[in-house]
Each structure stands twice: as structure tokens, then as C-alpha cells.
Image (tube, rainbow, N blue to C red; front, top):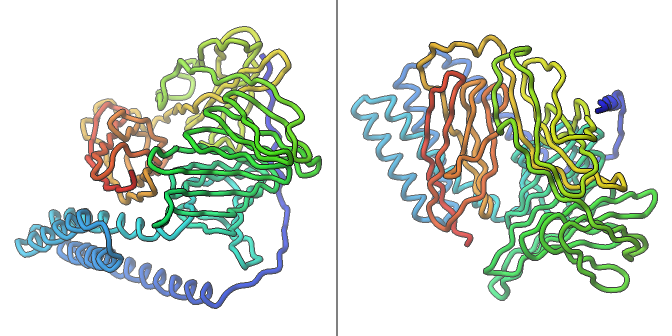
Length: 482
């Protein structure tokens, strides 16, 4: 077993760009700045607000959100629910039940906020859902590269660039999830929604250099195409699929890997199919090499979101099932969920497990890939997380359920982004199948989940602290895209 440290990212690099700023951008920035200053001032002034004052403020926010959702139009059923919550908040205020008024007002604001997000996304192409490290965005018609922000909406013609330590995850209106890996540049070229005359929808991206991973959902009710092109050709999927496109600009060569489903390559000589678990090399618009690649190993232990009591309390072993055709395995450990920074890589040539070196308290992510007889790495496994707690989480006499609050739910296509906060050190699950959620060390979380049905979806959110206490919230999320 060999441990190979990852070189540190380069620092101190400065990039200068000419830039153009539209008047609208300046106006929006000015309005946002004034609103932010006003909000900070109000928070400072009302730091000791009474329950009645907090209830009045919550109801005011809810009224504004409901009014905005009503003006946006559409989705009458969830709007009716938001209005009912607001009415109950006003009733509780009249009875001087201020905490109940705040709860009902928060529910109204969250529902109305979901409708406003739907209205915004209906005109948008893609939203940023996760960022690791240095990620920049350049808007259509501008020359300034801005720092990317989570939840930002991008449009046709916008470009996304990742640094040596940067990665970013995007979600499209059709449910496609795109992950742009380190040292890459991607442009959003086309985003065509279904119209009154056609049920087809298409998204196309242009990869100038680097690597992009794409997961498409597929849609039985309409034709849905997602395409990633380079100077060497284009790869596209029309059904549920997972594929990767890499492009080396200096050599003019691309690699396309079909991990799941069937991919279509369009080049100088027409179209060719790329079947599952196949890697092709493309040069000058033609496929010049085609090879089978290994699938992903199945992880065994530890379970996802496993919590260890503290540094040195136990030996941590990572295990997986042997993969047919694998001569060895590569194991990566990172403190970033997208693996933008690798703490170290371990090569295991004999068995199907490795023992971790001593680790400090914190959260860690790990994954495994098989390596074939030609030393070619296969598909990475799922990512799992484990956590090593410090002494501050060792109160075993704690009988108080953990804090759990969902502050926002954003619906995009058939997906929902659920944003909230729980107790630091807690474990979290979302959905009927108890999907483990990545919780940051400060207790905050932001998670993308695929919804299962048209109309109302019941989405449980469950938090469990280190002492085993649980808190459960039942969300109701409305969609109408199926």
C-alpha cells in the first residue's frame, strides 16, 4: 500500500481581465447594497426585539412573499396553502400567541418563496447548487470574471471556470446534474424548453478544456436531449444516463466515458453509439480508440454518515466488495464533498480494504475506483462520509432532541434543493428512503433530492444527535412537471 500526497494548489496567481458592466447590473447592485445595509441596520437596532415584535416582522415578511407569489401567477394550490398559513398567523397574533404566529408566518413565507423560485427558474437555464474552492462565472456580454455563488442562476452564453482547487455542481430545468471538475472551462450554449408546438427540450454545453460529469434524468413524456461538445465532437444522451467528457485543448483530443445508459457521439463521419462502461478517444472529429472500463466498486463499511467518538478512540477501516477485473484499487480521502482537494490517495493492490492513518476531528469523504490490468482507472464508487467528533459532542446524558429547521425549499424540474440547519455534529436523512445528507460542521445543510410524483410530495427530514435523540420534520413540496 502506497500513500501519495496530493501537491498543494498554486497560490498567488493574479488574472487581469478587461470588463464591461451593464447599467442594469450597476442598478441591481445598488439596490441590493441599500437593502443589505438597511437589513443589517434593522437587525442591529432590534437585537432585543420582543416576541410580539418578532411575530410582526415574520408576518410582514410572509405578506411580502405571498404578494410576490400571487403576482407571479400559476400554482394555485400551493399559493392557497401559503395564504392559509398567513391567515392562521394573523389569527394567532390577535390571540397574542406570538410563537405560533411566527411558526405559521415562516411556513407561509417558505411556501411562497418556493413559488417565487419556481417562477424565476421557469425563465432560467441552470442554477448553481454546490461550490468547492475557486469557481468563477462570466456572464454573456461581459468580460469580468465574478466569483460564483451558490443558488446563482445562469443563462445561455454564460461561462463557468474552475481553478486548480475548484469544482462546481449545476442543476438544469430538466433535472440534469452537471459537475464541472478542477481546471475546466464550460459555456452554456443552448437551453430550449418544450413549446406549444413541440415536446422536445434540449440543453447543450461547450467544454473548452477540462472535465465535466453529466447525469441526465430522462423523461418518458417528451424528448429530452443533453449535449456536451468539444472541438473534437459532441456527446449526447436522450435517456437516463451518466457520462463524462474530458478535453485536452493542447493535444486537441477528447475522451468520452459512458458510465450508465447509451451515449451518442456526433463527429465528422456522422453518429456512433457508445454503450455503457465504454471509454472512447476522439481526435479530429473521429473515434480513434475504444476500450471497456471497469464499473464502480460497491462500498461495504463504514456506513455513510458514520460517526466516531474522537481521534484515537478507534481504528478506521474502509472496505468494499471485490470488483471483477480489478487488479488493484485507488482510495481517495478528502475534506471536500466534490473532492476538489484530495488529502491523500492510497493504492491497495492486495485486498479490498485499507486502514486509515490517525486523523484529526472533522468530516471526511472517501471513494474507491478499480484499476485494470492496463493501469486504467474505472468508475469511482459512490461517495461516503464519516465524521470524527471532538470532546464537545460527548454528552451522553443529553436527552434534548437536536435543533432542526428547514429555511428554504427550491424546486427545479423534478428536483428540490432543501436548505436548513441542525445541531453541529448531528446526522441527517431526507426522503422516504432516508437518504443520508451531508451536514457541514456548523450544522448547516443544502441537499438536492429527486421528487417522486407530480403534485404534492411528502418529504421527511430527520436529524439525530450524538446521543441518539431525533427530531423529525415533514415537508410538503409541490411539483407539476411529470
